[in-house]
Amino acid sequence: MPEGTRAPYIYMVQMDIPAEHEAAFNRVYDTEHVPEILKVPGVRGCARYVLEKTNKAGLARYLALYEVDAAEVIDSPAWVKAAEIGDWAPKIRPSKKGATPSSAASSFTLASSVPLAR
Image (cartoon, one colour):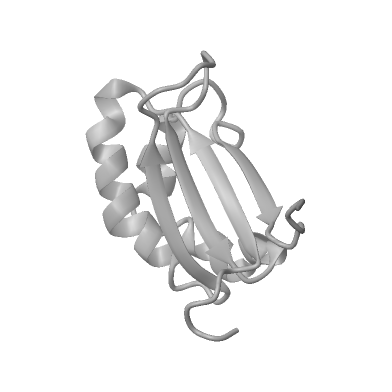
């Protein structure tokens, strides 16, 4: 796809982290996890957000949006390998709130090909 065009898919990840682990979480996410994921073929970018205000209790505080070329990118061997590099897997993943490491985050892959109603 031409440079500057939107990716056809967004992979959305929501998670919470205990307050005592937030500094390490943000350091590892910004300096290790995201840079490694951005090296995966088919990943165009990542934006991270923190929840400031909501009208619904219980929403995860952190959100990451990954722009990807295909829904399958997140299941690729390159993605899986990149997600295990550094302190993410041994130190951060086990400290995510509310669930076991394999299910502590909510994630969705969204296609951008839905036409807008006029």
